[in-house]
Amino acid sequence: MQHLTVQELAVWLADSSRPQPVLLDVREPWEYETCHIQGALLITMSSIPARQEELDPEQPIVCICHHGARSMQVGAFLERAGFEHVVNLTGGVHAWAMEIDNSMATY
Image (cartoon, rainbow, N blue to C red; front, side, top):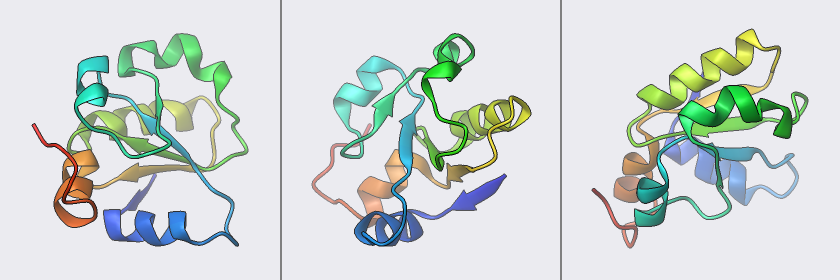
């Protein structure tokens, strides 16, 4: 699985010439409500097996959680299920708040 820093994701999202990824936030609803990257799709980690058919295996997917551990597990699951373009966001939404969007709430 590939890993992406928050700086690399910010550059990707700002580049309209690149296909935009699905920002798959796998945290719990209360975490998502506290803070999330704009445009992120919330599917909790526990719901991924039942809801994976909602995701396009051909589209790039960036898995996001608080620090990067849960999202790495979800990314590995999706890869085993045949998804080929899965990336884990290193440092998660916390790193995004610290390095990209200082106005974002943290917990």
